[in-house]
Length: 269
Length: 246
Image 1 (cartoon, rainbow over the protein chains, first blue to last red):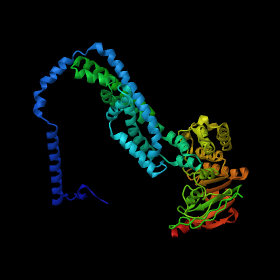
Image 2 (image 1 turned 60 degrees about the vertical axis):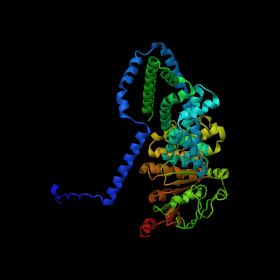
Image 3 (image 1 turned 45 degrees about the vertical axis):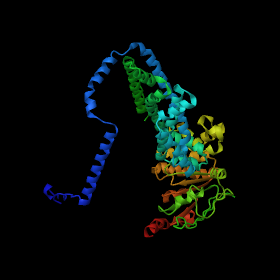
Image 4 (image 1 turned 120 degrees about the vertical axis):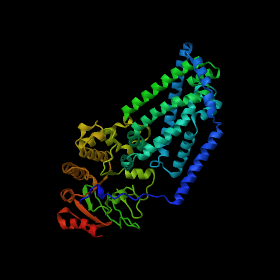
């Protein structure tokens, strides 16, 4: 078959119908209206952004040099934040491991159980950790503890969802093999499911810890603990030099945690 | 009385009422084209798939009447071997074999391999010896060759201390030599250890050399059931051709 470039037929130009063009015009107007409303709603003003350059400069001037006196307090608070994330992630991990077998479609003993587990996961995942922290403060009082509990609750949802999806994607062969050998549900989960998914679970948990360190900052404002709370206070009290030091220490912490988490995960998978 | 009998009926019949007996000390090979219902037959036997009707009697126990813990108990007496082998890749060969004994390990002891009762681990070890793989006991299952992995799966079935072994195309993924090894092993287990072994195969020549009885299946029915010596090659060829016509 001889076919040069000339032989290739040019596809006919696609002309959208009038109806489709009308549809697209409608969509464009709709999106435009949405943004117009949103900008109005937040009192957006380009003018304010440009006329307040002076404030920003002032802020920076008052932030330098960072106050070295609060260095130790910042490091201590960072350690509290890390501990909060560690305990919160661990409790969340244990709880989500308990709920996961019921939340994975291919393991769940009954449809209703599956739906119930999914509701728990959706609820705890959708509501941000600092909202749970607001409630936990009422329950157990101020401090890092309610923050850790809040992180734990939120982690049940986030980890539970990812764990369940991992299990739904796994090879069911060994699971059926053990089931056929007369193993119980618990035994099947421990010896066929967990070994297959454990590298992914470890990786997901490390990532969750990484995220929880950051989440514990915002939740820390509420609970009154950790580096997030120190930073919040310093800014509220116009102590910008303190805030600068705290922010620097915090930045180093976050970068270190993220780096270590990434390195560990790369080694596992 | 250790016999296995089943007959099933379905609306879109995969199995149109099949009767099959497997006796202790006997290797029965089931031949048949893809879709003839061989695998369904085996899966129905231990109710991994629920048959619509019919009955299965395993070592004198009625499979159909059992439920819950009782069903697990009866299932334990029939071990299954799969074409895709289905070992837990990230566990050692010995651990995989001992998982066959999980049905006998109760409660807290089965939480971790270290807690398994010594007799289960010992049975696992002897089962590995039986299939000639003790030197691989601590090797991860995912690093074993196909033939070795299938022998580990046979050992797992042995560790289950079942009275019946159901093998679903156990050698389809293996090279001829490994296939030979596995089938010789299955035959030996039937003859020397007195287990009832039912094995679905796609290799007529292997079937003729190792089976005590060959069952030919086509379109959900048993077409013939005889000893290898009395079976003509044309009969076997017809199993696969018949499927093409239908």
